[in-house]
Image 1 (spheres, rainbow, N blue to C red):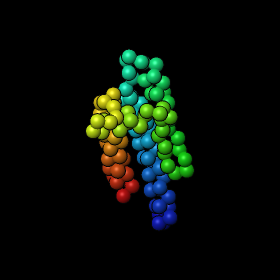
Image 2: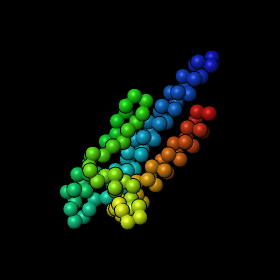
Image 3: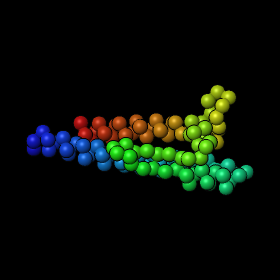
Image 4: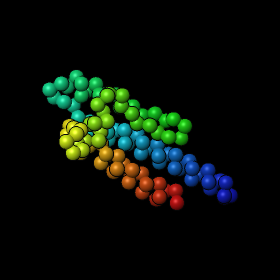
Length: 108
């Protein structure tokens, strides 16, 4: 196997791994997303607004609800929200750590 072939194989493996982890991250956020029981129509609406897309080589996970950033980050000091109990950031951090370990195990 030439160096160029090896490089292409590593890149393909890395792309598959990143794609899988992006899909997992999206699913984890949607499943953890809070639905306010006093206004379930708002919570369900914001839960349905989570979107995942690929732009170039990057995966992008977005939510167009104006308050989604507050919910995603969780409570910071006296600001933010306690609705997503673990906050979105811990979900992001856990997924990032798994992604890095998976990439290291399968591409290096």
